[in-house]
Image (cartoon, rainbow, N blue to C red; front, side):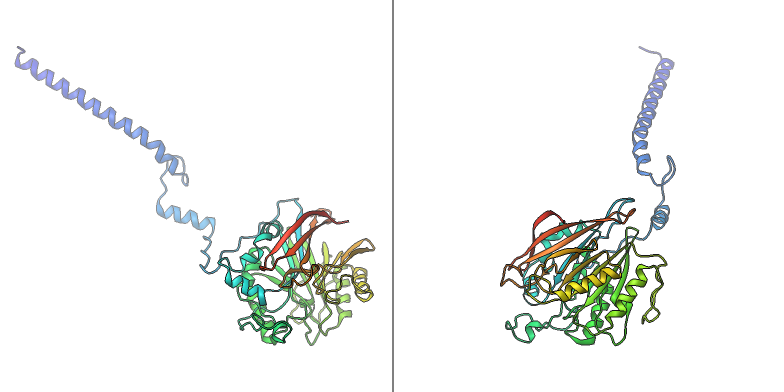
Length: 388
């Protein structure tokens, strides 16, 4: 049996051993925990812990958070600028009418107006900018054409839902032509509402709509895409305005001169020519598949004034294309969104890709064949046709 002094020493030894084991256990646990903590603290220095205040400051330096979109409308995807030295892709489409049976089809479907463009969504969003003819005003007025008798007066009076501008923006349609024969269907107030609603959706617009005096701000619109300066010019057969002045203004812009001082809302214009000039016309005769001599002469006049490409709308059918002095002319792109199905020609449309080299400003064209279905949708039928 151990003496009392020996037992005391043994007890103290056991206590020291157990204390040492406990310390080692704590150190081991701490060592396993610290790397995980260091991996979380990426906002500060090595091994630093970022306080909530520091995290808030870092978030502020990174820029404001994107606000959540309203539940009623999906957020529009931000247009991504082309990568440096990559080509800029534009898409030109024809007549777009969102009233009458198109409105009814959208209102019946759970996806709303997105249903109308669903089959061509990929085509549209693959481009940096889509341009088309908005065949009527966007207003808060009640539709008169939806459900109206075919051939009646109301059947040809269009107003589009206030949801349409956001639809356009979601599908890269950020520039529309308003110079057509239906933009005034609901009078000056309809035109004013259209401008305000497009502005809210950040959709730009242009077009000669018969102002009492020449207004280059409406007839000609310059935008910048991927560093390229693009000038769009409207010819509207159905409005009263000084067409010769538009041609003169086009020549001035192409020559790199300042904008005319007769503009009602003058803005600073570039002192060098645009990189690409496109005429978007509303002209010709409906349902005629070949443009006549008058329209052909007009197209050539715009080429003589400096246009690099001429496209047309209004006939509701695809018309012939040709070249004048090496400049491509598409007299009519036909329908893009419309509720006309009575003939094969009105059910067909043409979309045109314009792919521009930002260094040389040379461009290539590619045609996309479209079909308009009785359910209101537009469908891509052939997307692999290079233009001659």
